[in-house]
Length: 176
Image (tube, rainbow, N blue to C red):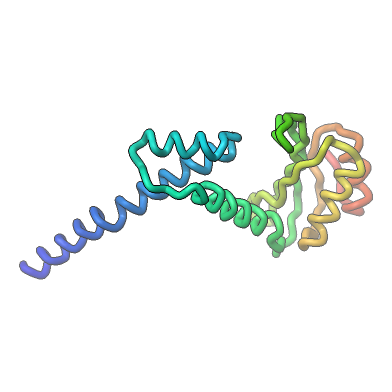
């Protein structure tokens, strides 16, 4: 009975003093990073955090978190594609992006692969100035350099640049 009591005490102690603070910190970091991603200035992010009652966060905390996020995204986008993808979905969408203090439209190219077992995976996402045949060719070259192979079907909208660069990049693959 005392052993169960000690385990229960340890579980409660562990939850209250170890898990909850970690979750609060993760939640705070999520709020900070979401604000950063949405383009909120570091100063305004710090003001929001302080309004939540969190004090003594250094001015370098937000940039450090952002830098860590950038490194994780870069690692994800540069990872090796280690299995053949039978099908790839290709598309681009436009976003207003702040760059050098100015807002402008940029095309976000996205590729989702589906392997022979039906598993889907985001293979890549990159920003380009616009949707062009040259841009798509560069995007496809990057995917192939990272190991993309086995493509039997390229699925996309009717953008001519995708069709033509896809035909050159994935010889023998059908387009739909």
